[in-house]
Length: 442
Ligand SMILES: [Zn+2]
Image (cartoon, rainbow, N blue to C red; front, side):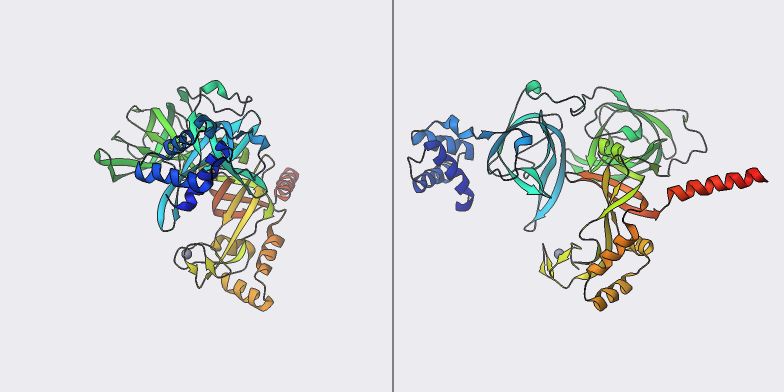
């Protein structure tokens, strides 16, 4: 462990010892336990405190707060929480891939997004009740966000240690029958009847050796969902099956159905009308999508209430496609950025809001400007913001229907838009009325 990494632990020990011992001495002692005796960090800290005449139990006693009391500037805080959601994400850091877990914590006072920066040290799962110690908070978009970093620890608590208000709690998932649109992260033992739209096989390496994974898309009258089957259930395209004992886990921010060892699959006569096109996206409300944590290929209609920063003419890194700001890529440093067009719009349907990300082609079609024209306009005006203004003029406060995959993360819902169109609901209704009148007059 590097000296800088030790520093917070040294000051924590110093706090427990009441500054009776110099930080230099604490550091030397800690270093000995860690690097000579090679004990774990927690053991080393407790040993040093004991050796220097302090109470090791005082080490874990930080300031305990409720989620609603967090300000966004806590350096070290303890919290008793329930895990409402836990999603894994791989990130690249200094050229290395690491896995973190993010989601929502809850206590009696409310909920808060968290990030646990090490999936191995914090194997968080939905429904757990935990004492989290030495977490820290930061402000993000004006709101506090909780972080579990190198100093944090978690301890399992009894399930009733946190009592949440009705409606906020994690549902207890017993065996349940569900439609595709109702599938949400954490469900176990789901029974579902659906039609297999596609199935493909893939060889994967697992701990027990090579395995065949069957994956694809299934659908019912409420929507479509991706599935993974970890056994050969002899699934065939266009068959209607009833699956018992499936479970739901989020994959890249979208709930996905899994058939594991305990699942059973049986063939049923189609419960769906023959003319029902299951491959079409279904309209969903943002509140529904929020409740289930994302969905595959859905339609959302709402009003554009904001065009976010980062919309319009942007530059991307030619190597990793990340946004380039001030000629700098976060990963590759100084690069020659390549121009791109995109829109990050906040769409509100009255019951909730989500961010819709529209790529270059969709932006071009919607705004009526192509990339070359946008570059020229921005150069002529010597201001790339002019393109964002143009997008705002076209979209703000206007109704927009978007289609795509909706993913959820700690910043809310985001749709990767595959199709978008503006519509005018009032006029459409008026037109329909007018048409009816005309027809009636004939
Ligand atoms: Zn880059």
